[in-house]
Image 1 (cartoon, rainbow, N blue to C red):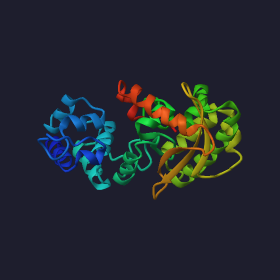
Image 2: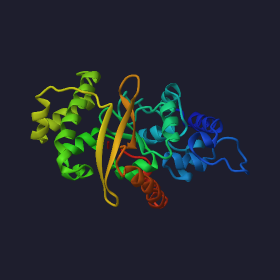
Image 3: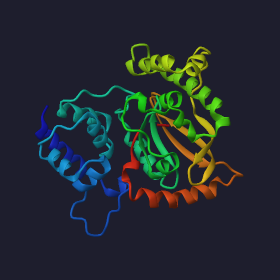
Image 4: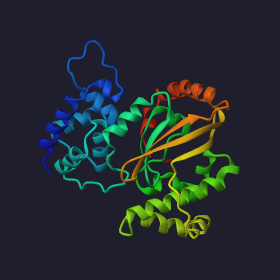
Length: 289
């Protein structure tokens, strides 16, 4: 652990990033070419005072904060690992909720300003999402374990199913289990997260156990969904997926289904979402699917 070096590394990384690269306005009177400390704090969900203390080498960040900083500063995988080593924290395993999100995937997410979009793990834990995704899908629960993922909540929390109309529930349950089986096999029998998730779901959900016994497998790449929004009603969307090379993460974005009123509803959502989320920035990032 070298917190002084950690502080210097954080400063060097923010100095190289231009505001427009992370969706922030450049402004005509900036005194620094890179990001200001308050901007990094905002992007990482930290207080300005706490981030200043990090750059001074006076605090050891948690693993969750390190993951947020790595995303905010668009670190490469090697830079992310270096950040964890300097902080004296174990590098998170591939596919975990603290896993590295590539700068390229984050750049794509930033460019989808008029489209609800999020990055999730293969266990359906949200790593990061934009404002419209939060407005469409609502805030995910706290935490970063597989229990915060949408698949776990789908089979253990009846309220999670309110996102979809009841007549669509069976189809989504089948799809979630088939997708999870592919993820579990890809991770291997020694992966504690996926094995523990399946074991707990088998114990808690007879529905999951029945579907798991079918051995169906299918990675979700494209799906048409009807999402129930509390203010706008049912919205017909296409959910498209861009998978990472190893399949451990995917970028999801939601487009309106042709021939429905989803275009108008998503346009209205962008207005409602901006109004609501300006007073609640905590909805911008968080874990579900």
